[in-house]
Length: 138
Image (tube, rainbow, N blue to C red; front, side):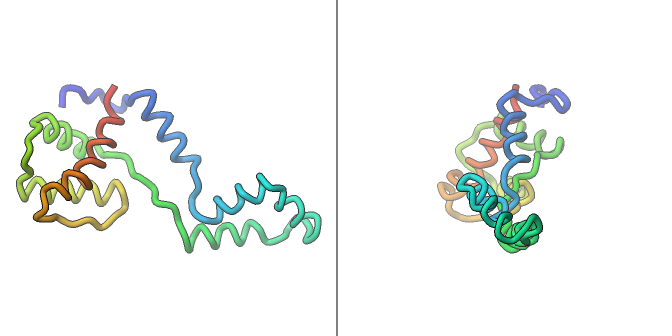
C-alpha cells in the first residue's frame, strides 16, 4: 500500500498502455493493416473509388471479432493486490481466490472461476494479476 503513489505509473507501464490503446480493436483493424502494408487498399480504392466500403467492413469485422482489451486496475484493486502480494504466501484462501478472480475477470474481460487446483490458479489468474500489478510499480 505504501508503494502506491496516486496515479503515477512506471515508464514501461505508460508505454504498454499507449501501445494497448493504439492496438487493433479487432480483426477489421488487423486486416486493414495488412492491406495497407501490401498496397491492396490503394488497388481497391483505384478500382472501386474512394468509398470502397472498406471502413464499413472493418467496423463489422471489429464488432464480430473484437480484440481482448485489458482494463486498468482501480485504486481499491491495486491496494488489495499490494496487500495480497506483500504477504507472499504459497497458499490462497478460498475468499482470497474469489476476490482475485473478481479482479481478474474485470481487468481481463474473462470469465475465470475459482478452482481447487492450487497450481492451476497460481499459474493462471495469480500470475497474470501479478504481472499487471507489477506494471503499476515505479
